[in-house]
Image 1 (cartoon, rainbow, N blue to C red):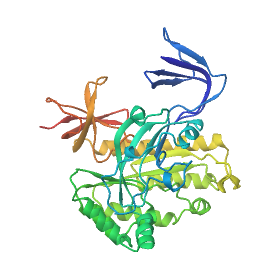
Image 2 (cartoon, one colour):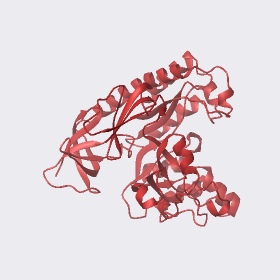
Image 3 (spheres, rainbow, N blue to C red):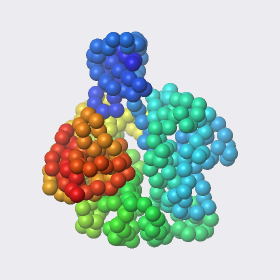
Length: 400
């Protein structure tokens, strides 16, 4: 057991903690607070006011596959021979000697989800691993973690423009998605879809294919036109509203996820209020909200009309409050529903099974806790009737 005291802590969520404490047990962070009493036999380290970033996770990257210290020999993240390569695994290619690993650790990142690039419509599986170590087998946390799919411009550029073969259009990309649905697995969940790259055929495919979940992650950053233009985002607020209305009209039971940033250049009070009202109007069920942090050397860092860090963090908390109310309303609307749930295991603390439905993406959207008269194994799909909520998580009972 390890206790670190007197550190300037930047948690993943919530305000900074000057002179804070962090407690870790068996390699896992168990507590972060302004004060923690040292358990008996605990090793105590005085950080001397140094910066501590507990549990910073890179959720999508190519670390270990795009080796910084090598030329073409290290570019191992795109297999541009077939636009459908679900059989590829990042774990087979990760180089733990990549210079990016110590660089990321110096930046406060301890864990990464790494995998193939976006050249193929289906690129292969991602892996989650700790960044400290010399052998991939000893660094693994989750394998496989996700399947990489790309429905934007990258496959068109690599195949249509580069190799002069299909997919040359988004029509062909949608057709390949239909081919993917013929493979032997249950769910396809789509993340990181650009708002301006939806076509009628892609929407129809998502709505018609049973394996494609009615859950779409569409990061927008903001909704104010001036802010979007300053950040070089394509489209405007009117187009976003029209897209979300069309998606909900054509895809039954759709759950939307997005990512938002507060405190961006040109976000004045009116633009911030507009963002909050946009959330209320669109009822986006899931949203990650982050305060803007200027990165040295970028154009955005040099832009005027930017609020300070404290104000950006305050606004992020206010948006999170708005989003929390929307999520509570969504959870309330599901009471009594029957949900297909993928069991992930048994939680000994609550003495219940835990799992996810189509509406909960792994690691970011929480779980459904449920009871069952019979044993349920991880990986089993079961039917659960939603009966209540517990700290934002749903609870239910398995229906036989």
